[in-house]
Length: 509
Image 1 (cartoon, rainbow, N blue to C red):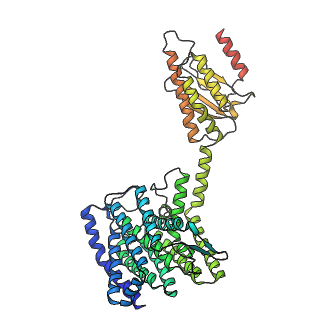
Image 2: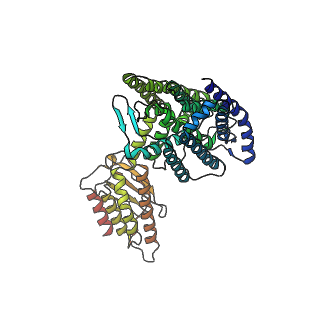
Image 3: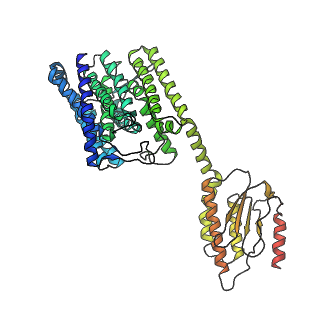
């Protein structure tokens, strides 16, 4: 236990001393995060805190190895794990440092993360089986490599995404490391316990400068480095319920906040038809701020959730089957409560409703027939053809009535359907004819507001009609013009289609 305390203290002091130095170097190098629309901070902040964290981590391990030969011997007995942890963490930390200074494309970062994850698998960090309470052990077989890579890459990016408020990521990582530390100490996993003690010390020292108001951010260099350490060490340190089974439930519950936020970020962006890599202001911490909770209270609230998940994870690892099940139920209730509190269920429901409105049958018909109308009205022979094309388009789109008012003459109205419909019972959408000066109105049965896409498509149809009328009016020997008329009074019933046709025949005679 003295070795763990020594590692913690050396890491803490190293972080305290190195973090301000790295912050000054970051400012000189121009590696600062300037405020953006989705950010919380209002001033430029250096973002190379991950360099200080990594230096404090390795310094504590080197110091421990120098004074405690038993630890050095232990590391020598597990060279593949030590090398895999150190080189993999350094590689992802360097990737994050490169992204913090010059920028790296998202697909490039993902590719490097996958390569490092495969390296970790080769060095012995593997998910060969999963133990689930009440169910038993699931052997991974040939899926061990992809599942391991998915786990490592997922945790790395989850830690990166949760780094959105001052002190949030560092605090969440501290509680996740504390979870693994307790389990490792009880299970006599010295290697993992030492690594977690070094992480906890670095987080406490870093929080002196990172808690609100933050003087430095860990950046991608810190989040990638720490995410990799947590992902790989948890595979070694989780209480193994059989000789080949690694229980992923413990690290998953311990990292519940960042994992939950990552999954819902991917769901949100998929529903919005955006790339899952695109940044936004919809993370759990952003939603708490938008609800009116202060910066510090939002961070402390998520600390509280992390503590509850930490206790649940320890109970899952150390308890019997029914106790593990109860702890898992508590963790599920905590996550569900957080989801409801920040309004993610309501968000998904509204987004699904919006997609339904955007892709309703009316919109699909308009998308199908709008191109044909534009082509047919490109070179009209006269006003009669314009009217015929417009009514054909309206009928194909299940429009109950269409009203066209041009610059000269009486308005033309039509009811494409077979049944007579009172115009006052329809949902009308009116569009100005920019090139002609009149307007065209579409009346749909069934009520309901038009979706945004349907409104745009009908505007395009009105524009095509306006251009066609203008083209006919500018010919040397124009055909009969459509006349100017006032828009129909919504309180006055419109004449039926038969009356309209009689009016048109009388005017043409």
